[in-house]
Amino acid sequence: MAAYKCFLPKAKYFLCPSKLWLAVLFCCLYATTNLYAQTEEPQEEDTSDFTRQLWVDFRPYWNIGNNQRFTLEVGYRTIWPKHWHRFVTRLHYQYTTDTLLFKAFKHKETLYAGAGLFFLSSKNDINSFEIRPHQGYTFAFYWAPRFEFAQSLQLEERFMFTELDDDHVFGMRLRYKVKGTIGLEGVGFGEEQGFYVPLEIEFFFNLIKSTQFNDVIRITPGIGYKINKGFKIEANAAYHYTKYEVYERTNDIVFRLKVFKKF
Image (cartoon, rainbow, N blue to C red; front, side):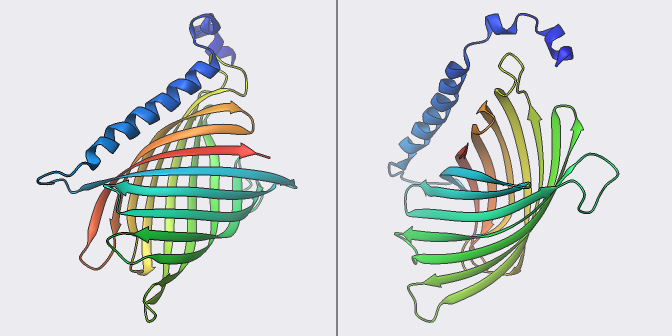
């Protein structure tokens, strides 16, 4: 921290209070959402290959001792113009250590497993209900004092049920994610407060394809604000490339808000 203080000796005098920065973050997200909501009005011709989506997630978590944690996710997703709504609930358990596979340098390794429930309500397609167990491994370390680098490998099983009696589908896929995070906590704020900048690139390998949401790649930049050690908010603007059927595919711009809270 000393190196940063020498360049910003009077940061606390010219930076706005933390609550004002948080308000700015919310205003940016609200303005972006309103901008795209206006595009819901019918157009004579739509030549764009991109869809526009909004995802909102609330993620409470509980530390249960011995480097163990339970995380719950409750989410809502929709698309413009609005022809489907998706409701998501996920719960997973994770265990973090620094001595699982690698011991030569300081790092974190995490094993996790859980399951998710996904309900799709659609005007133009078939409604569906999906049960999605998952198992994964994450390896993370600090490349520089304020830059954390992480890699994750996750296996998902997909059990999908639709309104058609004979259309129950099983799918399976691998997800590989690379994530870098620049932490700016403490720069002009308290030691546990401040902004951070995440960037994720995730690849999907569909071992057994499903009828809906066969993702291929996601590129997710964003910005987050850490209010305190157990509470942070993150906003993302991502690009998703997805396949639904053999010949149908979409390019998606996804605006996402995540709220993390420790209990």
